[in-house]
Length: 82
Image (cartoon, rainbow, N blue to C red; front, side, top):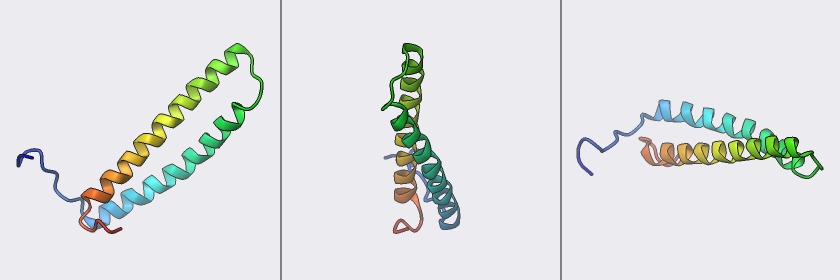
């Protein structure tokens, strides 16, 4: 890594706040994920099935991004143990 690409540690106070926001986002995504799962268990017409697939793909992507953000915060925080 060069000096230009090294990330400075995220200060502990800001990292804590960002982790709390990420946790809240995880909770909201869990509701959407469970709803999407339940929609996938019922019979939908073709149009409904396409909408459900779009919803499911979006929530899976958002969940992955949120997990990556949490991992980044953990590894780039001044207090990485938190």
